[in-house]
Length: 242
Image (cartoon, rainbow, N blue to C red; front, side, top):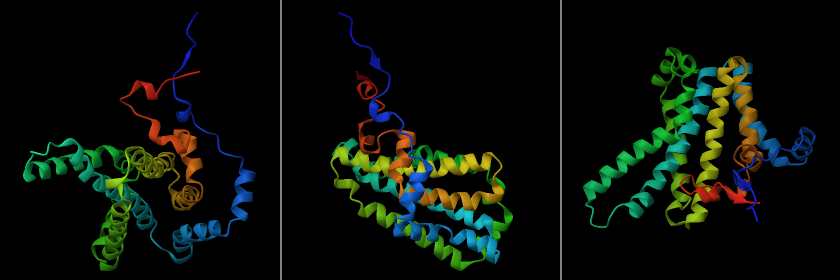
């Protein structure tokens, strides 16, 4: 008897279609917290179009916020990675050097979407106007420093170091995938020449990711409750019999 055909991908990895727009609108209207999220994310939009705020500064804030959140997660994972991979006989200097090299590698690879975003947004995010604004404003240094510190505080408070493996994979992938989606959206919007409405679009995107993170993940990565199942090094995680 012939063996049944195999699926090429696990059912957990199949994208899940989002509900119709009408359902989103009904849910949004019935949730007071959703209105608060939208209002908070629309502050830069009102500032730019109503009070002449800098669009470059607003976009840099979105980029910096996402990148530092991702870097904070990677940094919080390094101690566990070293503990599980380095032999106990390794000295402190070797561990420190290994940790630094691992951190640089992971930030470069995992943060790749944020580095790629700099290509279409180079003039906006790395322009002279923005550099002057940041360089001559202690308040901005304090703001961005506080933002980064908050992300590091949150990452180390998450308890990645003591989570069981399954829970760790699920939590880390959930957090990192959402940040990657933010960067990919920024890239696609910029690549299609939507500079004039980038900030409003980012405000709507961040609102969606905050209100319906499981739907955003499901549309791209499959079942958001089973992110932990995917293991690129294990063929069994990519195939499942009917």
